Length: 84
Image (cartoon, rainbow, N blue to C red):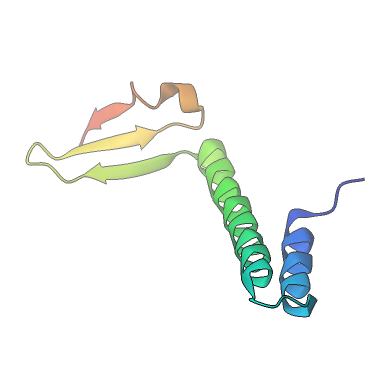
């Protein structure tokens, strides 16, 4: 059985507060690991959404183009459209 990622991150945060460490290095390392785990999870959720729905990105260059990142990641390089 796998623990939910956000539950694991919260558990690590609680552990970081509860353990006894003379210099606090272990507390800081565990807390930072929890934060990174949470951030990776949120980043993955965002990427999954972009992969599912696609994304339009305005390119800030004089030729003013729009790039559409389609739902499949394989099409990223070939997805350029001239802005209407």
